[in-house]
Length: 610
Ligand code: DMJ
Image (tube, rainbow, N blue to C red; front, side, top):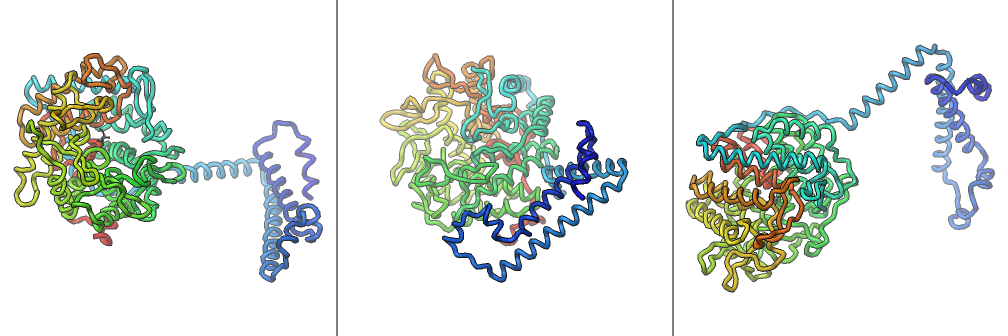
């Protein structure tokens, strides 16, 4: 019967209608099913003649078991039934009118489109009470001089953004000299618009609404995480998840929350290690993770796996999915059980064995934000997470004992601990700690609030000196306190400034807690230096040597310049009503997240963990 149906259709012209094509396809598939079925109906020896070269029989003598025979029989029944159903359906189709067929095809099409939407589209998230959002805009400083300075910083933000918009749009970062897109290995080979996501909340608080909307639209249309790119879990968390969550809380736009959750799901496979300590990198498409080749003995990095808590708690809060909370609490519990040499946390931990790598401890690169997130976990929980506070206090106590010293010239610095030896060198990254000590002063044990505020002030002073002792009045990447040298870089490869925020971050926290005008003055010095030496027609660039009056550019406009440096500067020249610290906690990329007043709310997953 199948073959007799073909002539009238095959003789028709090439302009077959959709319904006719559909029937042809159906008949063809019935025919193929029949052929396939026939293959099974043929006696075994005839199959072997064509498809079996006899090797199987030589190597594995084959005796068909009863089970196999039954399996084959049921397979044949299934094929027979499928075949009959296909023929039956074809007959029914032929009985239908063209209109009926058309309508049927249309319904099928709509269903496919809807299924696809369901698959890729955003999953509905449960409604949760919105935390108290205070001071999300304005912050007018009052006096005209401060206002003018603040306007200047806003103008710099606009220049950085407009340049990126013009030359690097959609790329992760910008090359302001070459005037084209830029990316580093922390983002894999992706083009995920890191600068857009990182800059959003700064645009928002500065009242750059058109730019914000432009960024929002790009994110809505283009930000896709199903890319074959191996990214840094830490960097993606602090810049993308942090940036999207902050944009969501500030603006209330759902798209940011949805994107943050989609991305977070892509990071979860990084935790599939024998210990639950995540890999440093994960491929967003395959979910395969690994560690940096340079890290001691295949280790994960303390500042990376220890800087997930804030964002992950918010993810659990917003999604009702306990997984995020459980992952970060698992890390905390694991660390709590481990021995700490001299009470210090080494920077390296092997995720396979659960053992420390080299015994290096730093409050700068590789260690920094681990300590920051302990304090901020406590603040973000409305000071209910006392376990985090205690861990912070103990860690800082050990750091003070072993790493913090005063130079001959009276500058307090934080060195690096390397296998029982103190290296008298401090990184630009370490300068954030001044702000952290000030932020943690209130609530510190033994009534040491004054002491920690003082320590914060001393670090701010030292870091300001590192700026002031250069030609450009911009701070080097690392500076020494050794053999008569104080707060200056020695090695050529430590003399660069890449638009980093940490020193300005500390000025801002110190300003908020003391209102000492010197912090605004120091901040203004930095604004002028950045505008003079880093500004180019295509944006802002880092410089390779802050001690040279004729510096060369590194040709990178880092996304954190827009996320952090310009935001902290803007806040420094705003009133305290803008993002008050009682209500907001800044993640390590300066993305403000609201304090969660969890008084009568239990986070899903916390019941089993605490
Ligand atoms: C930022 O991405 C974050 O502040 C991070 O914690 C370390 N440093 C860079 C900027 O310097």
